[in-house]
Length: 206
Image (cartoon, rainbow, N blue to C red; front, side, top):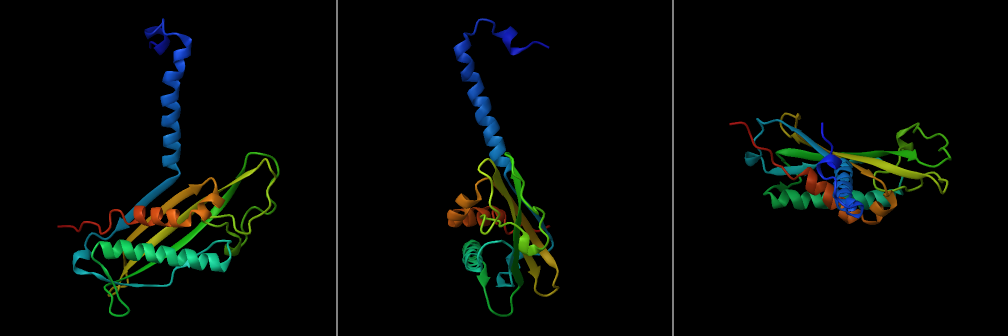
């Protein structure tokens, strides 16, 4: 098989950067894209066009941040979901809903590059799980180490009558700078909700 160097033997060496730079940019773009993922499952027999009323169930958010921070985050997520659903013609109610909505959120951390290991790095209980959007009260790290957090949130929709799940979407993202993500909480929440409900409601089976 012929190589690129054989096809263009007279290209000056300085111009090699012109070919390398696009490849580097493409690689970085692919890396960024792999850092987040959304997957959805649903019951195509449940017709959302005939079920517009929803009610929230209790949400579960497992992080190592202060409870006040978790509460603020929960309120922001619920508000963003409400805005997304109302924008699609759904109505939040306190009684006689057509379906229930709730979410489970959490994450885990990985220590890398650098030297010092994290004592007792494996979580022993849910209370030890690292935060989804920030480091919170996480362990002290050596200067040459870094911590990335793999966060995940799963939104559930359950038929109020049959009590069976009819739609579920999972949003996963790896935060390579969790502290920055926590400071940009509004942006991160809007992104996760926007991507999670992008294709909601699903098309029903004819």
